[in-house]
Length: 260
Image 1: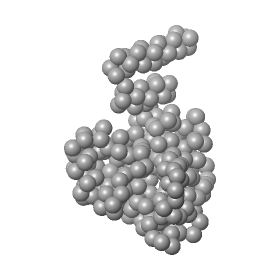
Image 2 (image 1 turned 60 degrees about the vertical axis):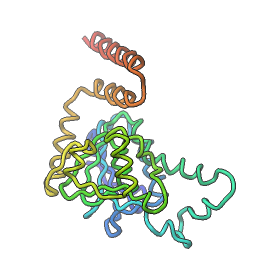
Image 3 (image 1 turned 135 degrees about the vertical axis):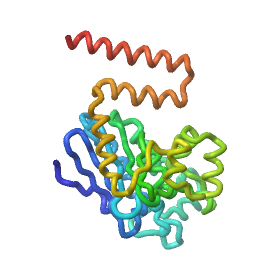
């Protein structure tokens, strides 16, 4: 196993074989997030080697992530981080440009050929939930509590999570969850399609490892075709999806023939 690498004071990356693990590492503050962390997440996604087949997103300690560090919304802000309130007060599109950069820490994972799995325990709130939604698959500990709290702060979710949330649970439920800011427990999350499974907290690591092994057992070439095929099905027409299916299958059959 390669040594764990600190790419940000609150983020660590390690690799074992074809599996890369990305760990939020600020347990004392429940893995609260700041813009520099989002920049680091985007860099990790962009630099993930092509031969990585599975990425696991996890958080240290009792919580996956409590979301945006509240100091970011105070007049004093946080040293070394963008001044969000000053950006919002500025003329022009500075705040939108900044948010576009922040979003990359979440949206970049979708373009990876690797399958991304979020292993979530405890609170996943706001940006924490949106990071879990950035993964392809979500496994929850039975103590997981998910919430979109941005509207409760007078804001909206803006880190790429709204598309996935609406796709997974439907418009009405996504509106209700986001507008009320209520907590969604692990069992409800599974029931409404937000997560694949909920397991006892002390079994989360083992269950995640089992899922990773199952993904690694699938033929690499087929899995690399499958992820973008299914992701594109969210927004494409049935006719366009049929074309994409045919093209992917032709590539796989061609590889089989050439491999004989």
